[in-house]
Length: 316
Image (cartoon, rainbow, N blue to C red; front, side, top):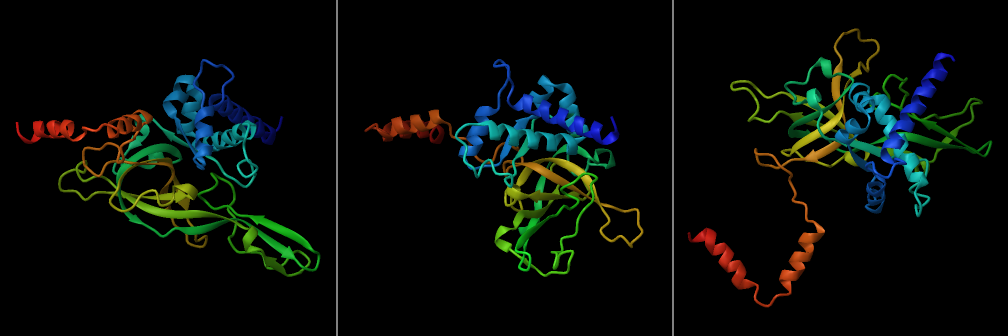
């Protein structure tokens, strides 16, 4: 087999392994089918997958996610889309080809867990876990993914897909300029209602001041958020980010320099507490808590038990 066939076979193997992890045939193993159904019911498109579960099931798959995240993360996204297509009671909108689904990763990252100060060139093209404080958030701007154009003379539609450096590992990037005419010189009319856009935002993360060495300024790193991750945080929030740390290259081809801008392509954003002690920002209310709240609210004498409980802390 030639190199292209070997690459295609490797891609299919990765997708097959990811699909077997998300929806295994063995009933004893951890199954993400219920989590996927819950994700669809909440109208979400990002599934949180524990890398600890992947490591316990398939060590090579977990190492591939950390060492070669572009290849394996895309395999997980494709496997998630294929699992959703096999689910019953799904709508045509959920199984459409234009709908993108993503896998977000969490858990223990070991040597790839760092902060903006410990982040170095050895983490390039690796999946890392980063903690810090959001210092700046840009505006949410639309990024064109696919444009549709109509040819009035031939009565046909044309479309063009676009890729930038944040969407591909080593593939060629395309220009974001819309085509104005076809090969024969016929003018094209852009159908903006049929075009596909994706939200895009850039934030800056700075290391926490309590972890910074005394007498040194805190360091920062730029993070790129796409699609459903935009507006997940605001300046001042303490967050934990999981993503791919990579260099974006030089946009100016005529400028000869060896300096390249680096950024973190996030796939998971977890809000931490505003306090320095850490913890989750919002407490999770379970079904048991709701039942207990409803049970207490139906009691006639609710005030005395609460007053006795509070008096123990106010008047020792």
